[in-house]
Length: 435
Ligand SMILES: Cc1ncc(COP(=O)(O)O)c(C=O)c1O
Image (cartoon, rainbow, N blue to C red; front, side, top):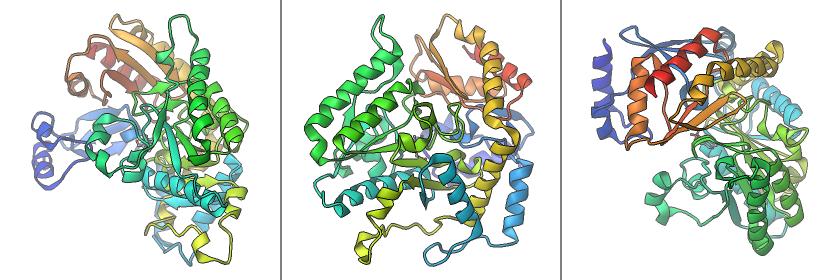
């Protein structure tokens, strides 16, 4: 079977995500036969550098031998078991390790990122109800924030293209000013602007705290907003506001967790541990190194304790069939082993410095605006981008052997951490050629 065969069959049998299917007439899906490190390889044998880690999930490359070995071992033990009424070693060990790393002691599992957002929203609401404050039902998120596409998650998302059609199905939430550093005024530092954005949140909470359950945000980088970056001081200030007004802080680290921003959890850049910032830490994507769907909401003892009771209805009765899947948890444990054994955070710091050097010509290109970088995420905006820019850039990059999906006029890289110097060079050269 060739690429063309799989493309035809895919178009007639599937309904692809986040896709206007008619557009596939012009840009058919790339049929991937196998993967190897940062490379995706199609059925005709062509290789593409996976510059966006397969929707931000892959950390240590495709077909990673260490994660593969863990999964093969787990397959011969138990592939899945119900987590209501049963438990198993991978889920217990993973929960203990995540608690030690984050400072948040209890782990509740979902499948994809959006399911974990639903869990965090429901838990926050239910906590206040159990705590005798049933009026605290509202949620505040940030302008241009993204938290997933299920109805609850979409209610706190602020991306018109994904949200507007479904508006009649959604619950109202308030969007506070985004701390996106690109919005700083002339002569205003990123920090000063972030504090101005926090003051906007303060104004809202001062009036609505009694009816607000939680603030939800993406720490340091608003991914779907076009890799909008902001400094840690914003997180510290939001934490202070949440303490002052008795509101939960839900840190959606689905995209930015597991080393993406240069620390294991992005919140660590604003506090010693994630628990110093987040009441709920939401994780997914990189948690399994991009192998299997798994998500997790970590929270603290005091919140957990409000549900611990003889009355069943005071408990958190939410569930998903594949909650805490043993294979996914084993992949996650293998990922944590790699972080510990290879000192990944320190290694990424050096890699990021190298890639910044490689990208200097891109950063200085006359069409490039707001070249920015946080940890293992790079982005820039393209001045004078014509309508259809993202799709056209994507097609051109494929011709140069690079898989990239710009967001509007923003081009970004989120490569797997195993990217090598020669591959960084290729990515920079391909980007320049496309520009
Ligand atoms: C910050 C953030 N939250 C939530 C989600 C939703 O995760 P999922 O697509 O796994 O449902 C995403 C996905 O990109 C995300 O980036």
